[in-house]
Image (cartoon, rainbow, N blue to C red; front, side, top):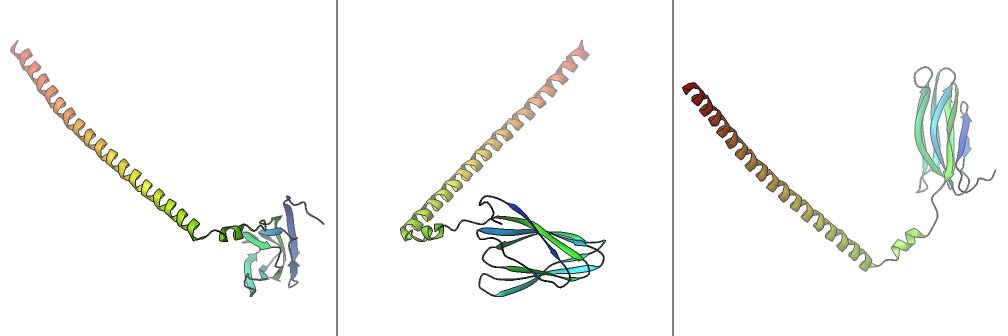
Length: 182
């Protein structure tokens, strides 16, 4: 079945004891495996076999499921259309893997575009990065200086306030003395 280029489609496969299931996403799509759920009693080990980017064979255990304790596991595995992947379950019980297909990354020549820039372009970017860092440092230093000045002012205000409070206390004592004298 042909997928619409912009569509995301649900995917699921049923694994039974020791029967490998090979999956290869449609061209231009990636397969996102999100969940493994076990049906039945016992325990099941779910494994996969695929090929690395370098072309080496990879065999891996992706989960172990046990009835009544861990009968479902979430995961996030992504497989490209250019390399098939094979899943197999070992043990008692059926396992359902589920996830979705989604359009893969575009195969543009964008990477090659970056390679076409010469050393000069790289130097300009480095220079801009350094300028930006220097500006950030200057801004931080200015902010620290302002903060220090604000603290000094605040400390000065606090001293003035405490002196005024002492004066107020002295005034109230004088008022009390005058009342006693009268």
